Length: 451
Image (cartoon, rainbow, N blue to C red; front, side, top):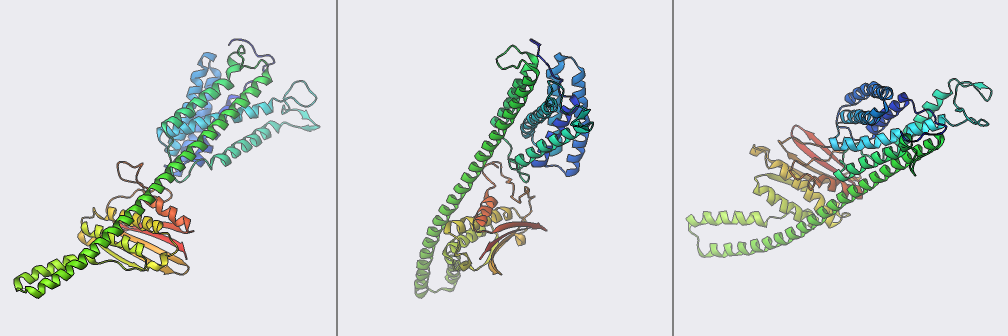
């Protein structure tokens, strides 16, 4: 070490540092999305505490040359705790561990700064030192200060961070965010401990208490920067998701407009063909040709059949989706009172029913048994609610997150999987909610909208 610290104070006990590192990991385990059972989280957390304590005690007994490696070892122990107890990805685990490490450094430094603050009216001597203070015995005061300060600090961190992380779904941080978090952690730790290495820099403290002030403030700044980074990451993710949903809304609306135009054209063609067939029957009526005309008329009838639910937008959607289902040999039935959808905009109707029926067709198409290639749509009033229910049979395995959102099985999962999210988004706009139920290979999507 270059330079000596005047009036040097005792360093933070290794036991306290280990407890802070463990509690910081616990805080983030309580707020992040966990992919493992609770018993595994509890078991890993229980085993990691003595391991982190042992590493810190080993670091304290080693030489100063071993200090950097010892801190890396402590960081690795925290990383394994987070990674194994939550089941995160490697990148997400590294990102969370970086935040937990800075939080642990901040709380440990702040608590020890409080502990080593001089008593009032004295030049030195910590105010929580066992003995007579203010006329009463304070042997228990150090323990009380430790418990209270740790509870306040880590409880406050939990209250702040629980809004920064989703406990029901995981949006893994990108590579840039992870590298940034690790870089911030390294710089924060280096600057906060620079005075312990050398006092011969413009950023080092010369006196014991000054060193601890710098350490606490730098750790606080590092934690604030990491918090701001997480806020920015959340804002960017929310913006990207909203843009994707809005793009899907626009796409569904354009698809509706195109389908409406196509169906109207088919209706005109079918109407003209029926008149032509009638004229041909009046002129030629051989029995052997009659069967061909019957088949032609049945084919025309298939294209001329349109839904009449009482809502023109829903008529177009159901007609186009029923034709899409027929092309894939899927039996599609719909019983709908379209007048119940009057409060909804045409774009919302197109998006809600378009997404729901597209998902049903996509899931039913691979079913091998023709009798089970079924899709049912029901739209009806129940009490003070409008109920929209789409049911379909499926064979493939479904994957859902904690919110019930289907995880896309397509290769490009980043640009897919917004169907159910779009439906939830529309339902929430009208004060409704969405539920998903899977039982005996029947998938049921139910949307409740207040009337």
